Image (cartoon, rainbow, N blue to C red; front, side, top):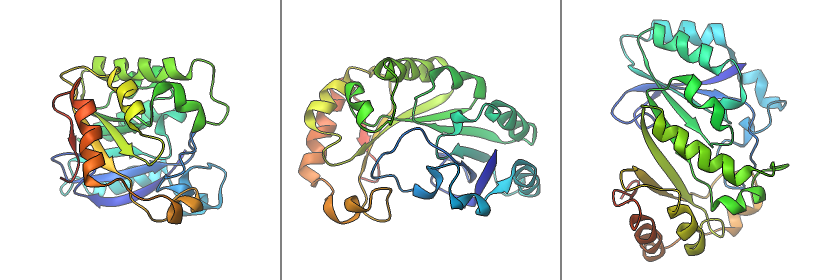
Length: 231
């Protein structure tokens, strides 16, 4: 496993100054992904990644400045040695946050994260649209991951990117069925820019404030704490 390093973040780990470690490779192909270089683990981006040893050495030097480390990607749980890396990071005195897409529910708990952010992409039945070669139990995997996050004992949140055409009112109704009243849920606006599918950069427009509010209202029927991040 090789890692990209963002040395300092004030927004990726709630309430903490953190570093972000990005793993390469993802099993999904969300067209609005803002980390396109990390999607393909065999891509040219690998030359800019650091070894685990170098990443840990960096974290050791930064212990007086940082209190958290975010394991992101790509999809970090694709890497079987992620729990070992998380253990090494905790041994340096850091709290660990895991960002995951939930496609591998059995790999969430072994990381032992202190905070988990799971992305909910669309209604479970539509995951095959974003997941090349999705297994027949794709929808069930997402449901199991939601349950695993809740059962982990970690602080957690579910994140929904309001991607045009992929998160509609109908999808919101279906996704609300995954949620419980106590769940912290954050909707976030789709942001144009450099994304995995270039057509999205020019062809997809973010939802209006009114439509975002309507989607939030649907989610709040099951998760009253839900809110729009940044508003």
